[in-house]
Image (tube, rainbow, N blue to C red; front, side, top):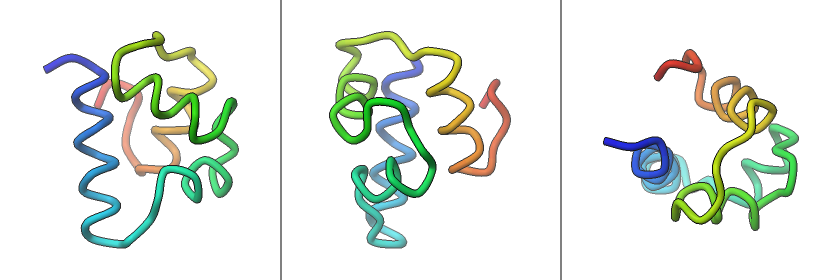
Length: 66
């Protein structure tokens, strides 16, 4: 599974289980570029930067490798 697919699944699970949107996740975890950039990452349209990856890892409570 590639990183875009993995990220999309995490966001789908977050929305389903906790009702948290990408926009609120972006605000709560200071994701650079906000919801628009998250969308580009989960659709594979733009590669993830290290800054974004760190925000995702902190927000999901996982390691960068995951």
